Length: 130
Image 1 (tube, rainbow, N blue to C red):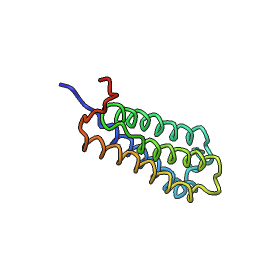
Image 2 (spheres, one colour):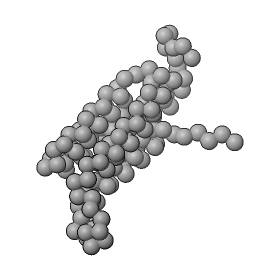
Image 3 (cartoon, rainbow, N blue to C red):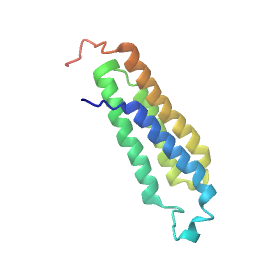
Image 4 (cartoon, rainbow, N blue to C red):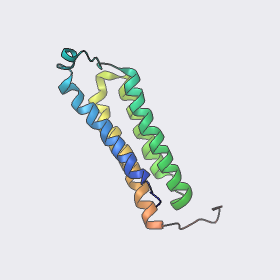
């Protein structure tokens, strides 16, 4: 039995998980020191979350472009979103202003890739080698 992973759905899920993490985190910051947990300004964790979204997203978008639709628009939207996420990590004072557009661009890139993949369903270009 073969299991197929929907990489766009996984990419959207990781982006939404990142958004939930960033939105809910301030609610728990005041109680976490009681449990000995310090994740305030934990840059390695922030970079890990951005890296995870990047790796899953790049794989999904590359696969969709190469195997299905041969279009770059989803990758452009995704790249803008990842750059906004990196800006959010660098400039913490603007994180709420950068978070929502970043997630919107990342989800839009995955959604567009998903839509293009379903519409074209292996409609190959002349330069396609598979």
